[in-house]
Image 1 (cartoon, rainbow, N blue to C red):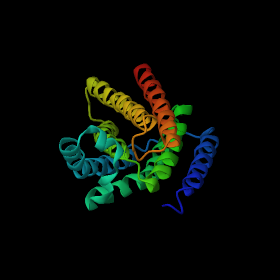
Image 2 (cartoon, rainbow, N blue to C red):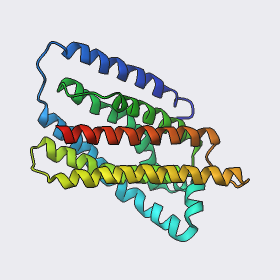
Image 3 (cartoon, rainbow, N blue to C red):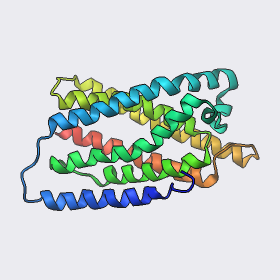
Image 4 (cartoon, rainbow, N blue to C red):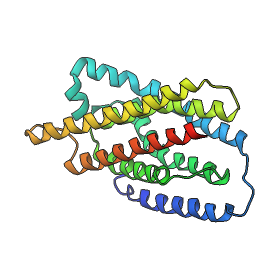
Length: 232
């Protein structure tokens, strides 16, 4: 990954070509239903995220309990634990797989907002950029994402299978997503303060800035997606 993290730009470029080429292709064609395939796709991501949560949360909790919050933010020792390191690698690679979410939007001729594809591209690049440099805050970013995605993709899979999921479930999931953004931003500010005061924290200033931009974009994306959901 140290040698090939920049391949994320290639994947992003191919993704954008397929997305916007797909929009042109679908412009004068009937939408595809694709519900069974969407259910399968979301189900795979749900199961993956659930397994990832079970394999990363124990190390996350034990580190905070035994070492403290600042240690959990600044020390990338989660990569020294074989199981957590393995699921961190899978987490990084999964950001390429998640790009496929957008193709369902394109082929089903649903509204594709700018923040959707921009979010996917920037998260992919940031994750691949951060993985080789072993940032301590990655423990928080990865674990929170696994947990939230466990609920989110399970919800998507159930909706695709036409289960009548109560609307409050979507509200709860959106709240969890926003909470993830808030906590992630706090972690970045905390890391910045530690480094500004001369402390040691394994996250560069450039990485902190990049991460803050990602979280800000993601917050806007979640809010806009929620507004679209309410109007549909």
